[in-house]
Image (cartoon, rainbow, N blue to C red; front, top):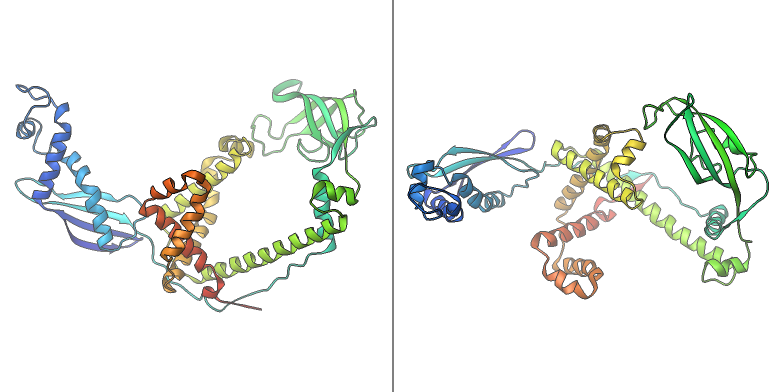
Amino acid sequence: MIVKNVEKKENNTAMLQVEIDAESFDKAINGAYKKLKGRINVPGFRKGHAPRKMIENAYGPLAFFDDAFDIVYPEVYQAAIKEHDIEVIDRPDISIVDLPLDGKDLVFTAEVAVRPEVKLGQYKGIEIEKREYNVTDDDVAAEIEREREKVARMVDVERPVENGDTVNLDYEGSVSGIKFEGGSAQGQTLEIGSHTFIDGFEEQMIGMNAGEERDIQVKFPEKYHSEALAGADATFHVKVNGIQKKELPELDDEFAKDVSEYDTLDELKAAKREELEKKARRDAETEKENAVVAKAVDNAEVVIPDIMVERQIDAILNDIRYRLSMQGISLEDYMKYTGTDMESFRKESRIDAARRVKSQLVIDAVAKAEDIKATEEEINAKVDEYCAQFGDKAEEFKKGLSEDDKKFFADQIIRITTLELSYFSVSFK
């Protein structure tokens, strides 16, 4: 295999011209013949027993070309991009220049999209505004209140509905006297004031008693997932089956014992304050890191290929799909409920996706400029940390890791190391 020419082109592409000598390609053709001969019929021969030349005479000299190319191409292509240190980001566009006929060598070109070069701007001595994260008594009180909410219990009440109550109800909706799909339910639970239902619905239930029925008038939003209901005036016939209110425990030492390992309320408050202060320090560090990287990204110049943006949008979608699946919701249903579609989502996500891609490219460029590498010890430690989750099968899993898998861990280490602000360096206003 000879790479005859490598030409860098505009728009982050490169053109490789590769030559495979006739003898090497003939071996690939022979391999294709052995693989396929059992499927080919040639008059006068039993199926699978026709000589290669007879098949080529019957079906043409290029009868095995495509399969032979598939045999030889992957290794040749990978060797070519490795030899010339080309970072490919998409599948190549292959064109045959010279066919391997009459003893000629095979020549083909591969046009590939390549990783763009980043022109770094200032990434050292970046000045950002320092923010202080102070934990107040109100912050601690809010944390304690959240703990109370977790152990609150619901109790039945015999009074009219108030804001904050949880109501069990039946309802039946109609537009112009005609019932609509999905507009009816029985035994539905609704927290008044949660704004779970259409605006105005919950407010009109305040004052109703258990067993009472009432017609509630509402208007669907102009932007609603069902076009038939968007902007429509609707009537819901509602019946209240029961009313409950949330009962919170007293704030005392017994409460502290129930919700924590501490014996007194003061100890619980002190622990919550310490947790909040640790979180505040982490948040301050994260904000500082994000601000510095954001400025370094703004200071850098790079032309981002569309394919990288599209793949980042795919990653965003996959992340959303996964998180929704944890709640038992499909991405398709989510888009229907929010009144959007895939095309609109991808279009609206392009700016965020491009920003993410540029950030990663700049971080990688800083790592290269600072000659940051992952040591064998660091990679092994990262692999051990990851494999530990597989318990007894950890060693088996570790043995199955490929070089690409190890590179993934190495890239993680390099990214983490690069994001240490000693490489970017920062000062405060």
